[in-house]
Image (tube, rainbow, N blue to C red; front, side):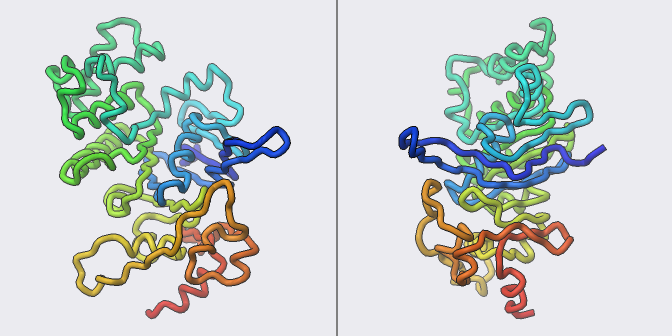
Length: 333
């Protein structure tokens, strides 16, 4: 039995945003991405706004159209091809793959009690046969998310941001999923609350054997939470590695620039941040060759012509850069 829960190969997601029948303008949000997510892992996906992180996560939930390539889901019971999945299979997949939204204030209906919010997936999917069974399941999941019976009777406006996010987490968990996409799920919270929610996610992951795709722009959060990290730029994966390897030695110039911006208490690190010139190019008018060459301080002619592919050294650390070996050799030992 495979240890891979989610496998995407050459996956692309494009949206027509204008133009005519004869001159269609396509926004390529995800471009030829191949990735494998192991069962029980906490997989981090990082990059600037507009890099395609959210669209990739939604494509793996079958909530965004896959326009090229393939994506497969395989757990102990079923295997689905997300490109050709039929209506009945999709209904079952919705139980197994869930999303935790970014904004806990916008994600919850103000007209529903917490009990009804958490119970809604059970009722919509027909996962329980009676109100008593539904209530039992709601109480069980609420307790895992540190919500008590009194909380279940209230409406969302009575709760803080951290408490609302725990409600969102409970709603995502109530169908007993295997795969969770957490899309910037702590970004809207105060720093003092973020650690509490992250620790809750890790605790639930261990207890329920879940697999997470954790989408974030905050590398310090990813370092604390994730087992494996992938970096996206303009719809492409530019680097992927186990978290420790990535943080010990990023190889792609874009990843290095992101990592150099992480705040440090070490006085020797001050002033070492690598400032990226310019803005991320438009997804509708992407540069040729390496997508990053317009902002890369190490770009040469080949970078402008040929698009690099992910390659590694056998350790699980892969990078899409024509010059990564050369640049590594230039770093002082």
